[in-house]
Amino acid sequence: MSELPPGLPRLRAIETYLRLPLDRVQQRVTEVEQWQATHRASARPSTPPDRTVQMNVGAEGRPVVVHHGECTVGRPRLRPVTRQGAIEALTAGVVACALCHPDRELRID
Image (cartoon, rainbow, N blue to C red; front, side):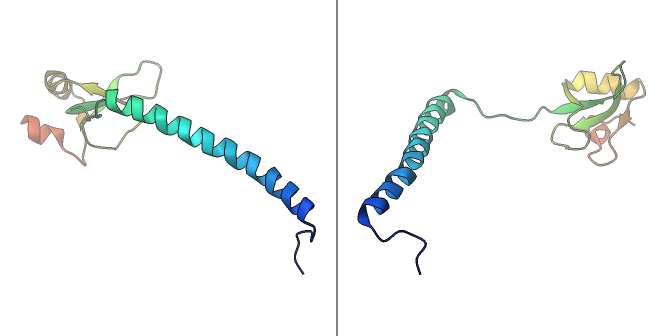
């Protein structure tokens, strides 16, 4: 046995009832696609910074670890830093990441 009613008027009513939400979803999909098309052209590709500094969780927010820009350890507490800023942080005693070793690239021992 089918779960649907046998009469055509009832089937048409169900069809209309189901089509209305689908039409709204399709309209919204079109709107989002148009929005993305206009904004994708103006958006520039996101490139990671060359180096980052992982900040302390505490209120003072001091740098605690220097990372290579593509290293994912420590996110979301990473802040971009310049090459010179990374060198200064490492020479001031901030630890280099044991995974990405930014000190090797910067030639800091």
